[in-house]
Length: 147
Image (cartoon, rainbow, N blue to C red; front, side, top):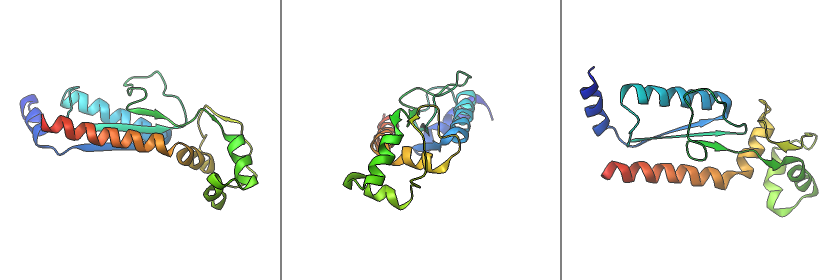
């Protein structure tokens, strides 16, 4: 396909959200961004990328836009949240159904390390941040599509 035909294809593609979770998902999102930029160009009005991860983004290219395409879910005192779950605080009561109380970790700052309960904790604890990022991505791609 020629560059013009790819750009023509971009005009008929419906708005799309690529949502990725965790380190592997973030790597896949970076590769998708690289392919979009390579074949269509950096002004892709029809596609939004959101990678949700408990670790900071590495410095390798391609990079996702921080706080927009890459959404950091760490950076809080997880041990304090676990203590609130064990104590039965109302706002964390639903966490007790799946969060093992024997987990011991302090600050979620360098990723969940593949430990699924930690990843789930970050997801649920930061759900408003996730909801906002997804809503913004969907709204932004629809708005750009109408232009």
